Length: 482
Image (cartoon, rainbow, N blue to C red; front, side, top):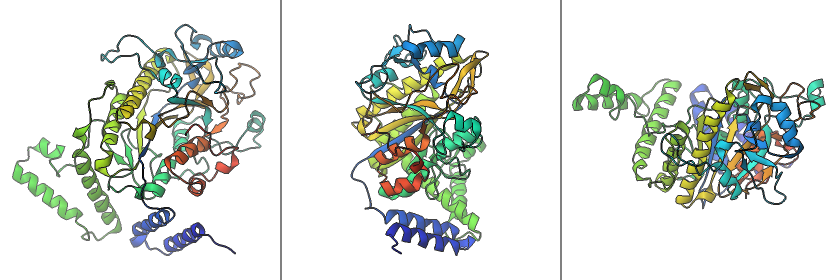
């Protein structure tokens, strides 16, 4: 039997891990890293970054991208009732010829607004103008899937659907892992980082989160580095941490604290494997925040200012980190930012107006920052969310759904186009409806993520490893990246 190099490496790793004691288990992870590195030349000749904007709660994309005319408009108004947005104020989308339906528009908060917001930030630079200028694309009806499924198959239970549908925790996890069949899976971006991280010459992790803990960036080898939108957080009793300030340490006491901590985490002084793992992680964290803190002050003044919103400030810090990419020795990076308050069971109209204003402003300012740095074609920002919302309304809001539309933004995007199929919005007799008001996805998270991974530099064999269910779907590359 012929065994190729990849199969040989897999079997060697499995044998090594199978015979490893608990004492050596952490060291065995390095074998995985070495095997991944052996499958391609070390290093990259270019820079690329993926930036995930996760909208926790489940964005109502059917009121984000809205039909403005035709039978789609008639169906939308009938299904949405009191939540239907009037055509006046919608921002028209102008897809390229053959690039998707011409009768859709964006929520008014995402278009070319006039005036300034409460922070004095101009509101005339929205996501809509990025789409119409070819710098953004819409990927339609994306959701978690085990395999393609029809309404009849869903209702009869003849084809499996993802477990715990419509659950916030489960669906956000499945979006971030692309593995509805494996509740313990690492994130798909974490698996990418495990494969490609040694292409960076610096010691800072490839994955950085500004939006808190997440499954997306969790890998077997690469752990994300967590930061505040306002900079790094130093450890207590070390480097003048907050605790030392609280108890009023003088210089000598601070030095004693740091020396004691250094002794505790010194290499080779811990007796237990978990103590060694903790000390190793702590040492890396200290090195990371010292290195990052040393380069953060060099960001330019942005020509498009970031709004003083939580999402705006997270993306402003991502822009600063990208500006410092060369100083940090980075050629590939994955960033995670997040925003909440999207679970709109009530008061959806005012809540979504505020949410989408924040989203549109932040995405536009961030894209403009990458253009100012001269690397707009090397940075791709994409949205994700727990799920879409239901077509029907309940008390001024919507219920948990399934499929939803998403935005991909950047100079490397084949923009001004829709990808995938826009679903029917009919209230009755809708073949895209589960039968209970939720739209069945026709584009899998696997396809969405694999298209980004291919642009990022993962080869076909790597994509097959990272997305093992991808072969169940018609296309492994949706075409929205150049």
